Image (tube, rainbow, N blue to C red; front, side):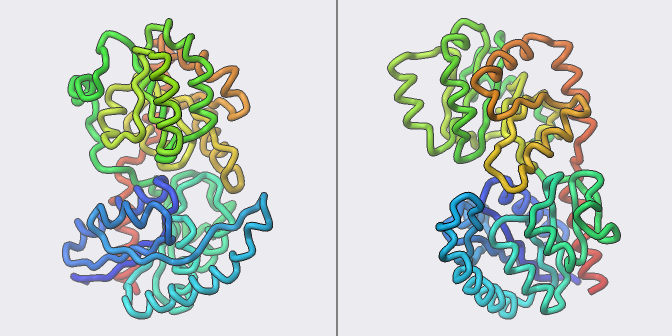
Length: 368
């Protein structure tokens, strides 16, 4: 099929959007004449990031289900019904040859409608512990691409294809970029660098853990390249302006993650599936702090999959204030331990994930 049509659905966070864009770009390479339409959730970051990457997107009024605050779910059912109707209209009008779901609010209605209409569907499960929506969608999906072993706990074994998770472009060959990276961020090449990333919006626990130990960081001889996230940047910038710290380099968001990874001796991060996949490909030692605010606590499962293999250090969210900075400063000066972590995490990399997922999609439309 020379000019197939694809819908890529999902989003909500960078952890869903970046893999979705990688798959879309892979499809364009494999099928240069392909038409690709994204379907996301209204008001979420995909509505900005996807058009910026050059792809059209339609937004659904869908919203997530709040497990803790039940009163916030009053509009959940009406929004879900409206999203199902709109998804049906979008699929019917666009006439895709295959629908790809990457997780996030919008993927549920779109994949549900596509399976009802007999259109081949592919589910890309990024985590080691599948969420409720993906477990339900997996029963009818044509194929399910996974990034961890033993996923037959959640999905029909015959539908599973192990591919790994797609990563952002430009993360290959970062070693050659280290000199450029020090210049880009204004860092001292003679001092170790700890990269702190809590996601595009930020992570309160990580930020507060760093803030609580600024005096210790000042006297450590270690540089911290710290992405605070959009929500917390101004507050922390004002705090540091009143008490400057020369070895702390503050950024709201890091556009050039290739350069940030290149310059880092150690990474402190949440344990989202996309971030972990990137850490594996770049082979960087990491301290993973799973977010407790995610469905089924899947970030803890992700982090344990690495820590059990000696490929990362797991620090619980509740331990951040007492342990995180001390652990990072000790680890970043232990070259032998850093080397062991780097070697072990590199073994878990799947650098061909995007290509492999695209080939699975190609087989679905060939057989459809």
